Image 1: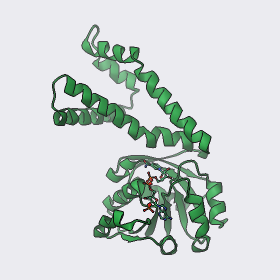
Image 2 (image 1 turned 135 degrees about the horizontal axis):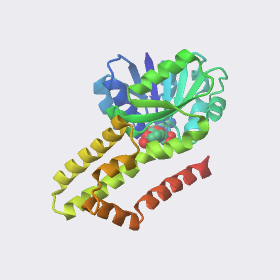
Image 3 (image 1 turned 30 degrees about the vertical axis):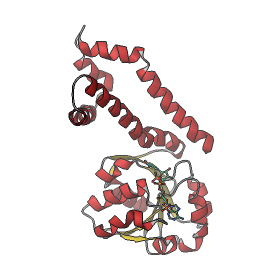
Image 4 (image 1 turned 90 degrees about the horizontal axis):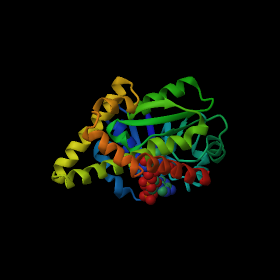
Length: 262
Ligand SMILES: NC(=O)c1ccc[n+]([C@@H]2O[C@H](COP(=O)([O-])OP(=O)(O)OC[C@H]3O[C@@H](n4cnc5c(N)ncnc54)[C@H](OP(=O)(O)O)[C@@H]3O)[C@@H](O)[C@H]2O)c1
């Protein structure tokens, strides 16, 4: 199968890394204007080019990871490259399937929206997928493709902005939390490298506990909070300082920002 990634920036590179890690022999084409920035992909067998037209024409699946501000204009300028047998998967935030269809100008082409995150590159993304009326076999094909990058769940299109905030921006929120943990760890005695090692594995362990035990976080918190112990003292102090409130407010602020744009 031939896959084109249009707009191979941060997300596009993560997606290609995810595809390369699979055992499948996909033929991948990556486009962007400054191709020297992705020249390293050539060593992995990826065809790197500036020419979106050629990339679309030569592909079965066109993954579009262009920015929301230029995706429609670029797709519109390549209308003649698209045909009904291709599948288009847009990763752009806040750009609807209807807008993409109008830009492409091909009514019966299969278009899906996917919202992965940059953990795609290590096969650990959570990708929300929207498919409005696409052929079942095309849906299965795209789900398989995205599965190489992590887990895939299907959502309604009206939840895509929320999916962006929780899943894609969510990575940055977790990283900031982890950075604060590291800083705290250094203050209480660890060197930075050791603190990072402890925090990384602790966060990974916490996620695995929730995933494998299928528990709510509070149930796992109960297991590590001894009455009158140091954990509950730390947790309560964090809450007094607005820990949960600031996270929830941040998530809402990100959501409001996307809502205003779309
Ligand atoms: N980053 C994330 O975590 C994430 C997660 C989910 C969804 N998204 C969505 O994914 C999209 C890409 O995000 P990103 O963070 O990867 O942005 P990015 O790093 O800026 O990537 C966009 C790429 O598009 C290229 N580009 C611009 N004009 C082009 C053209 N005419 N033809 C071909 N390529 C062109 C740019 O490279 P040149 O300037 O060299 O052309 C750039 O590398 C956005 O719509 C975003 O909403 C991102």
